[in-house]
Amino acid sequence: MKIDDLRENLGQFWGSVSDGWERMRHSASGALTRFRPGEQTQLPERHEIDDPLHFPAQSWTMLGGDVFEDEQRLVVRLEAPGMRKEDFSIEVRDAALQVRGEKRFERESTEGRWRVLQCAYGSFQRTVPLPTAVRGEEARASYRDGVLRIDLPKIEPGRPASVNIRVD
Image (tube, rainbow, N blue to C red):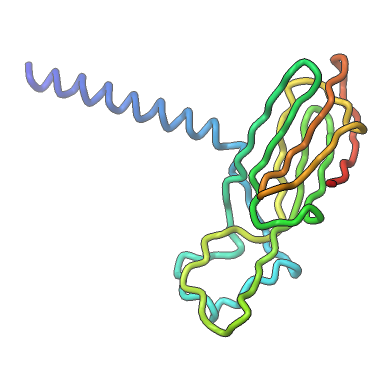
């Protein structure tokens, strides 16, 4: 009887862990973003980094985001710290918002070694599905305190056009 109780409790525990993992994986899958370092990224040379887990060609990070909707608009907010507004390119294409950018490495002003290098640097693309059609040509974007905010006015249901959005 004790073995059966143990099996049942273990089964319930495993089911709970599996359910939690699946929910986290589904929720975070859109936020997991790959960064690809390029010539403009300006990463330190490998011999300047002591961190054995640093692989610049395989940099991934979470660009957390929120999508808010009211009667007039959608508001998309993406956490993208360490960038400038000029680093972003934003486009409404089909039923999605595409945000591209490049996060560049900033060197210290003195000589030394990098002991840990965990931040992702390079170019990225993040696609956010839009739950309703928007007027991309009237969209406004701002970048403040590491958060990119895009306000998208809604239109009647229909296929949105592809439009570039300037960051103010």
